[in-house]
Image (cartoon, rainbow, N blue to C red; front, top):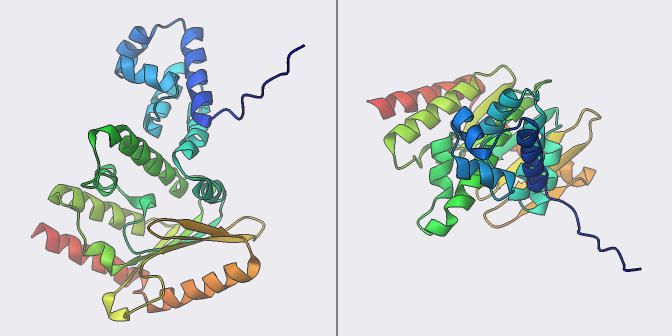
Length: 274
């Protein structure tokens, strides 16, 4: 009797693809019919079912509505998007999804509030080749998918500190930058979000080249995630989390108030439009 070979863990993307195919078969639809009904390209839908591509979350929302499956596909998509990230970031994102309190500092515009066009520009550097197009599209889709965190129930309490540097490095396309500033303004006005700008006048500080995120769960356990240009580090050690919290407190003390920060953003938007 031969040995059973363990095929290893099935990726979230593969599970999502299998679910899409089962639903289509159950509905008695061919790929061509599904494409005609939904307006999505037939080859695109085929690649989703085969697990070759990760869609935007809005595609899954459309297909959930089409099949009448509630939020089944969106739920599978949330697991599948983790495939696009490295292990340390996967662990962080799982904790982020259930966090009740989120504090973050970023030198640039955080992915959590980027528009699609801005994210596309950030991820499509001059080194990007035609072969990288699928990778860029998947990264954009996964990044935008995180933004449901700001509107999930119960809403997390979120504080975002952005370095003024983020506002002085605009997108290359004027319309893209204007829409990004409008998006930042809208997020700053959310009732569960406090957004602050750390001005250049604050001088040098200890997080100039790395982002810092602190998360607290319902049971008050906390983690800290520090991410630089090449790697990220997640820590659950209470002493380390406390040190990062005190570090964050110093940044918050140097930043403009939420009200003054909103004024800063609106002045910049007005300046951009003139």
